[in-house]
Length: 167
Image 1: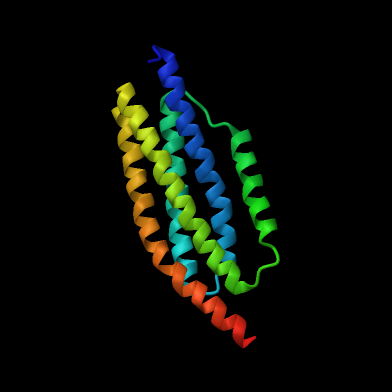
Image 2: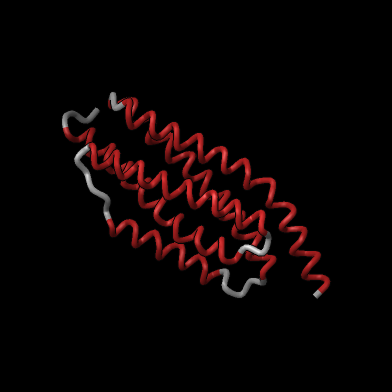
């Protein structure tokens, strides 16, 4: 097991990774809100955006309290990844985009759930109860959001087929 500042550095890196993921989600969610055809989905994405921005702020505060700072290059690279995904899906119609956006949001929630599990475990092992508690709180928020997103996948996919057939 690492000793001294190596442990704190590791925890800071995990937090910084989480900040970068949350930052990329802010960008992606703004696009999803503007692309949403259904007011229910737009509202869901807006709630998710508000939550994500708050999570990012809480993580940044924790990182700062540990003496670290966020790596802006990671944020930038994650934003490029989001843009590349959008380019790959550029030829999709509105129904496909709606389905893809819900799937993408749901997939990201599950990535974040696992990421926060890792952060909580590492922080617990390091004796950093404040970071572990923060990670578990955010993880619970991510799980709750995933549970709201999942039921939208099937109806949106069905609607895309119906709409596509009628066109």
